[in-house]
Length: 464
Ligand SMILES: C[S@@+](CC[C@H](N)C(=O)[O-])C[C@H]1O[C@@H](n2cnc3c(N)ncnc32)[C@H](O)[C@@H]1O
Image (cartoon, rainbow, N blue to C red; front, side, top):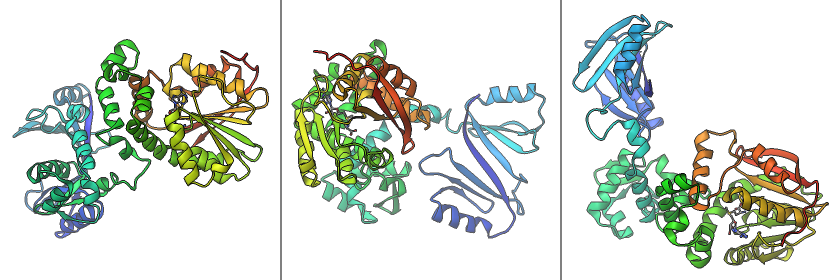
């Protein structure tokens, strides 16, 4: 049995209550009123129709139900009904069909009336909503289109006429109206008056100012689009355990970024934006006072190193990354005014790293690689750190204390892109042990990022 939505029905007995309730739930909390009559007010979240709330007048005519009641939507109503009968539960109303709506009312063991209904529209159009939510590509594509067209930014100032949005974004007015109409239904835009569109709270999350959010990853051109295409072709990766990206684009993800500077710039920008959220916490949560020299291995556009150098003025830094990204990092370090305390080394972390620093940081690196390659990177860090240095590994672990879907999503993404994998804290310790690194401390930063400090137990012999 699967429940797909839940809706409390709350009885109200004052004549003007429904109007006041509407003012609060619609105007303050942003619910949409899906039905309003003399006797009922039905509300739903515009972005998640599973979040519902009904109010029902119990004083007037037509108020057939009394008392608090729950409506539970299930995928298989007949099976739920058969089970209720098998358990000998009391039915307050037998199974009935009203139009396309089939339901029964049962009294739960706490005495609460529970109306069990078949998932709406499941038999009408477009398949079961629960399945549609899992499989639909139209909405994600529509969101990408409206961002790419710049319409989100154009509407940022407040309600804007369709004609202006179309003219300024260079879109066909009729087609743009169809796009926006769909996004109104999804709760991304509102249409306060005909052909005037405004961003909702959800729509505002798509704005440029939300750097470091999901929004950075949905530009439908450039690197994000290639990543999307790789995800759509994931079946190959599941079949083989290999990255599908090279199959689609003729070279590995990192080679692709190095070959097409625009792609590299795009990736550095989104990666830097996402790292900027956690960088201040990484700069604050570790004891950097004893560290003189830090090497940021695969340091990307310099976001983390800039944060470290700014927060700890005694610190000297080195950033190692592939040549194109190293140049971007150098420019950012100069702009941030910390270049005089920093060396940028264009190169690969599969080659020997600058040795003798106190700390080697690997931020969001190891999950891009399979175990063999991740081990090679760790070995390079351990060799360079020697007996005295430490290796700090930071990134989202597979067993992060967050909703599971957040970690499994990234795990599948790195599989499709680079045959990488997310690792649990335990996996990481096991992997590091193969190159003589032992955990000295571990902490969760910003609720999602595992920061593990390793010391060298036995320095690996330098590999070729
Ligand atoms: C996921 S990003 C992480 C960037 C940065 N550490 C952060 O946390 O924002 C991975 C980085 O690894 C770099 N990289 C990939 N292959 C590399 C290699 N062979 N040697 C050095 N850097 C490499 C990429 O250029 C990119 O900057």
